[in-house]
Amino acid sequence: MLEQGNLRKQLVDYSRELFLHRQGVEEGGNLSVLTSDDTVLVTPNGLSHGKLQPQLLSLVSLEGQLISGDRPQWDVECHLAIYRANPKHRAIVSMRSKHISELADNASLNPENVLPALAPFVAMRTPILPRVSVIDGNSASHEFYMLAEKARQYHAVLTANLGLVVMGKNLKDAMYNFEELEETAALRLQYPNENFQYLSNEEIAEIKAVFAH
Image 1: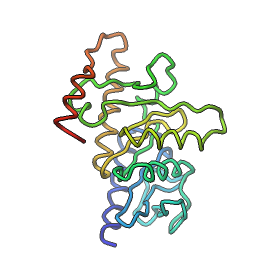
Image 2: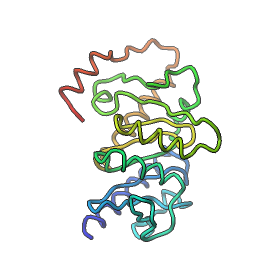
Image 3: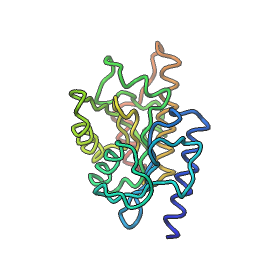
Image 4: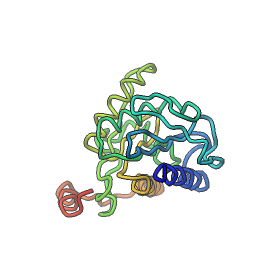
């Protein structure tokens, strides 16, 4: 119970941080965390991130059974699929953040990596950001499957429906990953015509070998 109480407080604190920095729409997006007993705490449906309270969070099983609280938004199934696919991921932030969302529908970007790393610190955490495309308007289950498959290898995925989905070994780690990608996207959009010096595959491999995340 002590662990769950701490995690509830962290979820509320980080949700409010996102709200105050206006990095997502007021009632959009979700944060979740996997507890040591393999239940998932997740932000509830239809409540402003600026008004969350610890007791209002939803608790569900890894199979999606509601244990306590209100039923969360539909995209909790995405979070659960990721947790089942890769047990190393213990926290998830999914959000249509203001900068990186502009990249989701840009067909000219490489879907295998829509936001190449500009700095070593980004390469240490999320060197590759793949984009998952939805085949048709009724393919949510397909998108969840594709997300889960990408989560086996990567720490972040960009989608049209959910925006940026970022994973981490804990909530703090997931938030740092989210913030680094959002800041990189902001820089890319601020100077769209600049010839950025992206890190090469060899440089990224060397960084990952030294600073395994």
